[in-house]
Length: 233
Image (cartoon, rainbow, N blue to C red):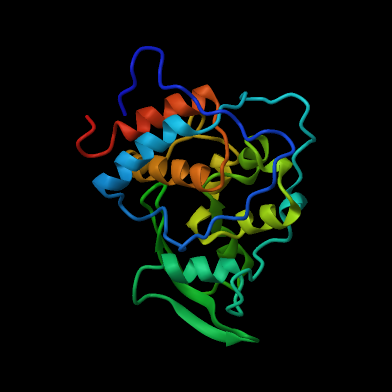
């Protein structure tokens, strides 16, 4: 993305006390997908429109995971929790083994995944084994703690729960890599070079759809990542 001197003008935050907008209607598209040229261009434009926020906003209550509801609720009503939905979606085609458990028709038991952050191949034969289950985790591309300081602290509980379980925000990734990323934004943590374009487009898309803000160092880092996209060098 090419900005003029001093950068593009940043949008203003939604006025305090204005109605809490409804959650965006996501289609479950994965951040794993290689972005098209059109998607990259759209992300470039969206980056300049994100509301501005301080990197460490003053006066916010401390982030608590519980503010986003319990882990992996079945928000789409298909009988399976969001972890199983993401594992099934992100598995290497033809490798996943599932079972029926209660009302869920795709409780994921085993399979192969490619971690988008490192490119490592992850193979598991028993995801009911705790050590294997911990080795593949479901990551929020925009971490919940980051969402909290960039707008979610002012949301309703229902909206935060919807964000935490939005398939468009979630990726199946390597457990230790997810732990190393933590709550960092692209100014503090980046995936492998081959995934940086998709990561930036996905991050910006999430922030735009959910009306989350971005700080200056975050915007600068995203600008650098977008420069890795084909045709941007």
